[in-house]
Amino acid sequence: MKKQGVVAVIRGTSYEEGHQTATACIKGNLKAIEIAYTNNNADMIIKQLSSDYQNNNTVLIGAGTVLDAPTAKNAIMAGAKYIVSPAFNQETAIICNRYGIPYIPGCMTIKEIITAMEYGCEIIKLFPGSAFGPNYINAIKGPLPYVSLMVTGGVNLNNAAEWFNAGINAIGIGGELNKLAAKGQFETIKEIAQKYVNTKTRK
Image (tube, rainbow, N blue to C red; front, side):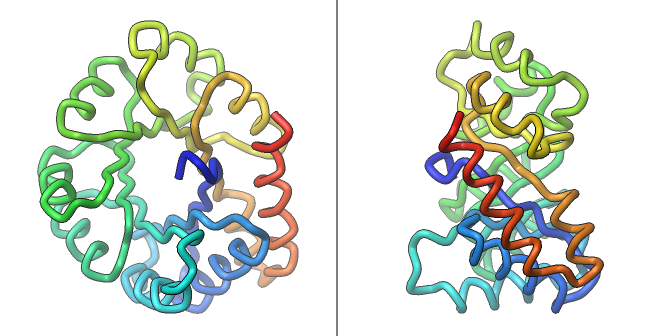
């Protein structure tokens, strides 16, 4: 995920919408896909995408908005290669460790970040990014220079490069993609996905 640098957070209201959005992102070279469990068909989408790209090791399918350990296990059994949640959950960390799956919890404070790291979390999600902005990265990496950080919430094409320049390891983007998906504009999603990928290379 750190190598790819950009994660598509895909919600949608149906199996078809979620699957088509993910496929469009991958065609746009955005290959780290997070299927949010706000979609009632999240496990089915993860399972199908895992099958679609089983021979492509550049595509990384994970699960997002995972609020508890049973949901994490459901996602892992469906094929998710990483688990993302809006806040740290001890039981979720334990089950992810049990299955050897990376757990990326949302944190806002140094204390929350350290707690998550103590439970084996190698990447920490700063959420919501709109609450503090790119300058917060330096504040965190002062006492924790070795921590790997991902940010979601408030990241867009206008500020993505700024986040990378501040030292973020990965960004999660979704709002713009999901609005386009609701309108069925999957070709535009592919184009937008490529633009986000390019923000990392031009930082």
